[in-house]
Length: 81
Image (cartoon, rainbow, N blue to C red; front, side, top):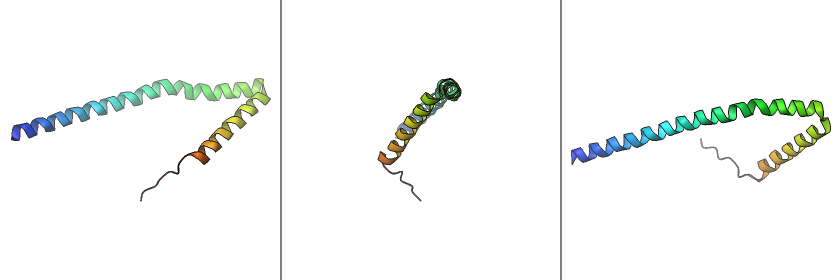
């Protein structure tokens, strides 16, 4: 019976290790995919503002309204003390 409990403990450790490896891979993948986007988006916004200011203003207003709507309609964040 002791061997079976040890086997289950080892299996639990193996599953946890695999999940941690997947989480680390997911974080690296997000960094690789979203890193260049995080740099390119502000550059594109500045370029749009220099080339066509009214369109840049309209885009900024639409993004602001969307964020405001999302803030108002999303459920409140629960803070546990």
